[in-house]
Length: 313
Image (cartoon, rainbow, N blue to C red; front, side, top):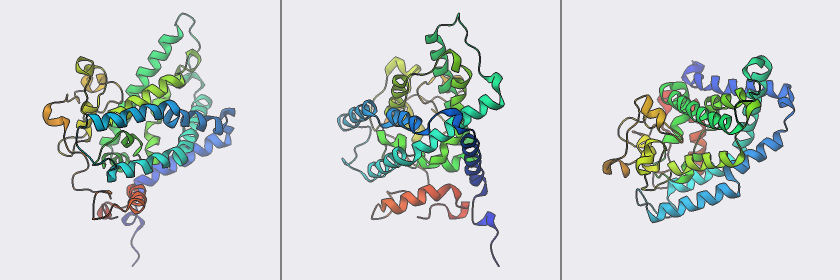
């Protein structure tokens, strides 16, 4: 007898893929509001892997060797896997993100034109930009929380948590469809579109801050850690033992403090092991050989596999 589809595929994950396809189709049918996909992809690529971003990453990689949280080989298995994800993101995922972002923007402005506030002359542009930045970070926090609390979303997010050799490149270790849940972070920019927009420079700095938080560095920000996320603060979020739905902030720690999910670093947490208990997802550290491409494919397919088959490479 043929097994039912639900026993062969984790159907809720398909809903996320279907939503992305429908949203992208709506944007495509509306010509993405007249914005060229090529220009958007180029802008995103400049933000994520442009010269300035690569310079930041190079500095952080050096810092990992000078002041590591955990000693790792120069090119550990996890580092090679994260490099694979970095190349995959720059080549294939950024176009998807551009399509989703433009599609959400054009759909929101078309279906809900009132969502875009008119220009407020008495409000200076710098203040509008600051509000967008803070609100965007808050939206990222709530989306991150949902990724930990909603099983359907966690199936995509657990890939990011599977890294046992943390590095600055771990920020790119994400499933392509995880970006669906983070689309909410675009809403503040859509609402205040007429009053200002985040500059490329500010977005590069934001991205660099998030990347730095994932680095294998024993670095904190002292009193400023009450405001900004440091590598020591974020490592607690990735720890192998203990709750992982803590320290969810991207750039600011204030959201975790407001909602009681902040745990500040101690000597015991700085060098904590990272990864997923029980390795429910295929990881490159398992087995005598890393099998990078086979594991990479298994990690991308992972969210769609039924629960009883998790962990098989």
